[in-house]
Length: 524
Image (cartoon, rainbow, N blue to C red; front, side, top):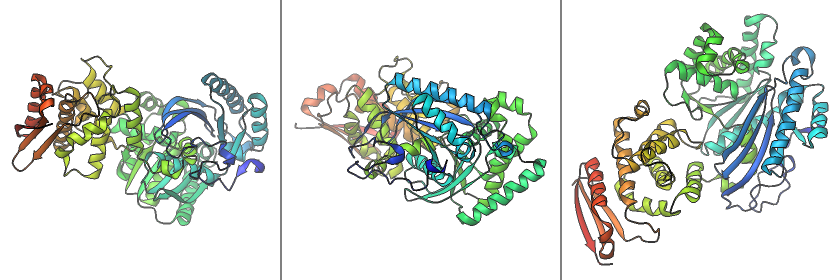
């Protein structure tokens, strides 16, 4: 076991991309300006589950080409026996053989396999690794608790480049904490507060809760004050968040970036304690094996929030697997905005005129001179995505756009920002947003935000009519908000493009602004 534990992880890939990465194999990003990502496979052998993820797409914001989890419970019963669960080991070996076959079928050159608490703590952990390598040829890297914390925190940074606060990753047999700030991982600690281990504590709820209190107070002494945002990573946390959504009647069922307050955590922990777990499982859609661990995780979360007093709590679907990907990025790639990179990739892959999104953004920008940088970022994303759903049936295109924006695997987006982006893209194809199946989601943003999204969508809807060539930048908008006057300037040779439909769309945009329109011409 000790020979495979990595205490000094390799540094991030330098700009040359030629460093020996040891634990992570060959670099994925030889070119610092790389944007496309060849399929990359990682396997996380956890105490509760074994998961294969294959990433594809934009390197800074990769999509999940394949994602499969098998609940093996390798760490079940370890407190008593000291070795891996025999049934869990059999399931895990079967899973690893399946994943190797899948990887071969997908043409992956290699799989990076990392194991955490159960394998590193078990007396037969090394033997398990050797058996996996003998059966599949796959080498398992067993990482220590602090390294697990670091990689999970890096996974959070993949989705939130500017994130700061405390990352808490809970697995089956351990729980890790790491602080993040300025794009870097700071102090980190590990503990044995995984629900599989807590379940085995003798003495019932009183002894278990005393143990949780003592351990978390000890962790707090090591980590110091951490009252910023608490990022929760791990399947048990996601299950609790799903229950919180159900309890609140929350309309958007996207776990990544879902926010909870300390008060809602307290209420949901109480709700779990008072509920029949089988009924709760059926209502929430949480698996039976996961639901069995939820009460123990809920006790940990309750004490964690009470001790650290975070200002708010965010669920991260990104963790150790994404952290392994982030590990191999040069800093220049890490510094890019994951949302914009994903939208650029989508435009290049699916738009009819790749590159036109920038032209459209420049054209409509005069309408948004006073917008905040955060809002301008969303406007840019909308322009890049404005045409990627053109293949959808015209009768459903607006709804498809809204659905894609609100539920797509996009990093760096709050839920309210997803709704804004979705509404803007809906209005790219439709003047009205009423009478759709998404009306309950509209209420997640205020009336002013809905109005701004409508203006953006109608501006894109009009602007898309004036060019089919990204080089033809021969028109402009001028917006005078105090006068409520919108001017459209076109060159003589562009005037034929301003037909009846274009005129109607301009008038619709002006109506959303409460403005008058003036058409101006200039010599080409």
